[in-house]
Length: 64
Image (tube, rainbow, N blue to C red; front, top):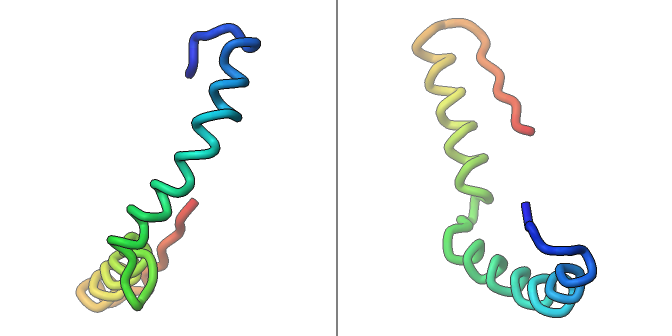
């Protein structure tokens, strides 16, 4: 949470943060993304499949 007055924060947010952050985030995501997709999703699917195999019961995962 930003503890600045709204009149001061909004120009910073729209003038600097929202102009620079998306590009930097996209560059970082491109470094970790795999041909299979998001590493978090890929590992979660694999983990659920292995757990199902070990337990012998259906295992589902959810993400929010």
